[in-house]
Image (cartoon, rainbow, N blue to C red; front, side):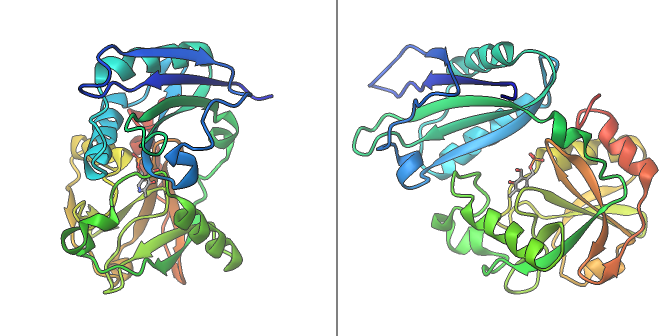
Length: 291
Ligand code: PLP
């Protein structure tokens, strides 16, 4: 069995529980109730970051986004005093190597009012060993929401990292059916959004752009870190409302995410892009994918 670790976290809720507690358990046996709303409705949140030989990658940004997702779902704020020691225990139980740390908090067992929390760490050595330096192909798919959905319909939770990723996975299967490796979602009114598990970066006239974070998309920690690297290299990098035709003006593009880092795109639909191996390596060299 591949290397993995599971830690159950008691998530304190004001008035119900004051102390934080966790226990390291066997990941191969059952721990989550069949009545948990994570299981029955996907009602909860998660976040994922990398860990390399015991060192978490960009963890604070992920904890901040976990708290943001909780607020969007009206879940209690995840107390860092409860989660940080539990994360440390999970990382220690996992041991050395390259892993992914998944933080999960659901609304708990229906009617109970106490969230369920757990942390799962698994090996991503195989994923990291995949050579994506030659670039991947991406198909644009309509997400079916307008670009202003987060403003007009916040109850749709666009931009929260919820446990309901069935649609994201379905989009990836559609890409495979069409002969592509990945997906770029586009709003129903023609603006670029994000991938099902990644953020988009385009290079246009020597500047880097990413779709504005208020478009009902997840603010990507890897994209944000990439822009910091780009700035340190003297490149201008900014969020912008990008219509689909920005794809025609770009000469290079990437999908970024915590475990894979910045992956260059060789093709979006029938548009072909240059692979800038040097910039890709620089984006991946620091906080994103330290080796
Ligand atoms: N957008 C979506 C919908 C995602 O699920 C993810 C990551 O899983 C990202 C963007 C990229 O986020 P990060 O770079 O923090 O991994």
